Structures are given as C-alpha cells and as structure tokens.
Length: 73
Image 1 (cartoon, one colour):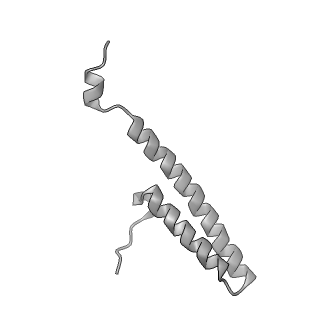
Image 2: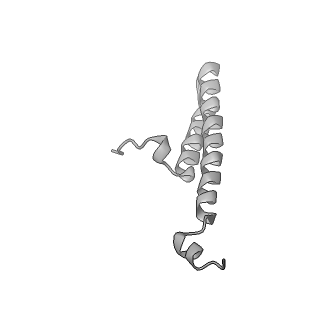
C-alpha cells in the first residue's frame, strides 16, 4: 500500500502520470458525467504538471551559492 503524498510534494512526472491515469479511466467510463469529470481531472493534472515542471526547471537553472561565490564581480 502506498502512503499518501500531497500534490505539493509530488514531482511533475508523478502528477502527469496521475493525470494520464484519469484520462485512461475516462476512456472506459460508463456514464457521460463520469467521463466528463475524469477528463476534467486529467486536464487539471496536466496543467499542474506543466506548472510544476516549469518551476523545477527554474530551480535547476538557478546558480548555486558556490557558483555565485566564484563569479566575477
């Protein structure tokens, strides 16, 4: 059994995978309401994954304190 991990602590890849799971579930939904709800979740998770990925990329590009201490004045 997996321990619950809040979305705020998940990586963009984990969030994107959850969205893809919702999209797969939507494809087999039995009612139009369930299909719409699952598709809506899939879209929201994809958008959140994109936002998280951008933040992760910004963090990776940020120079470390060591790099900054060796930078020319």
